[in-house]
Image 1 (spheres, rainbow, N blue to C red):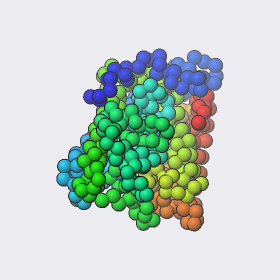
Image 2: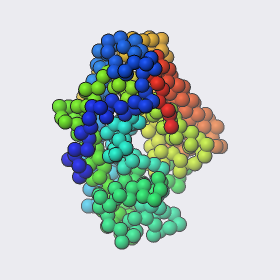
Image 3: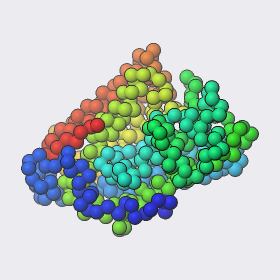
Image 4: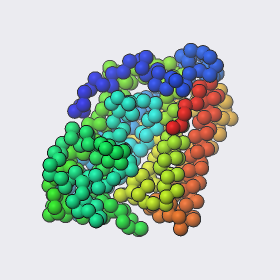
Length: 400
């Protein structure tokens, strides 16, 4: 169980049903509670079945994410106990593996669910970026930078959580990208990722504090992922219980909000457009490991999971009614258009040629075009999801 208060995700059904209520009330003037054939033309039964499948996928993908984070934690502890190039390489491989299922969970954001509830959601501790490396550790030109090199700062889970984003949104102290930086270091290479030496954990200045920091931030990652697993577990007094009591209409509204904002604002906007405009590796999402291309692929895969109601992972395979089924009841042609754009976006993500920081360089027109093509397809997909909201007679949520 997380070090944080476990009762925090026991949300009321009323609160769940209102998470995007101001933007997503029924455009037809109804009460927004669904019902057979009510508002938008889809059946409440189909919508509720899709909501059940969604919850099953969320639960399974968070379990898989936690399991691989546990494996990452074990590799990190091996590195801290016996620093070597071998244990460092093993920890890096474990980080790359742990990212795969987590990225597919990003589509569950943006409607104030457990991951990003404004009161206690851990998303800002898990995956915040961009990261100011000098906030954590030494950087080129400043060997004494960072929390690690300040002996007056106590390194603990509570302490690092409180320091995360303290004094600025780039002051990231925790999460996947903090671990990434501690495993790879700054990326100064055109041909590959960062190359932090294993000696940083053995003979280098403050090696013991660096190892303690790495182990501590990994423990905090596990705490936050356990919180999410608990929040979506079946047959518990938790967020999942409230989700199961939602009308199908309200559940669809929430799930679609995550799909729209991930494809439009987040991945298609902040993560790609910013990098394209600057051409700088500092603006890529996983800049230390050169894993950004996988970020793009798995984000789109997560949207595909929810759309079709399918998931394949270590927890098993899931297949049931998806969001598409409810949309197809209203407009099969619209559902087919989403199918096409979703496949295009996934194909475009897979077409990226890593490392991503070379794709976005302003003097690499072919790479730049590949990234721009992905951004364009994601924006088109987001606009199509806006059409889905309209077809279901739901107000389109603002993208910001």
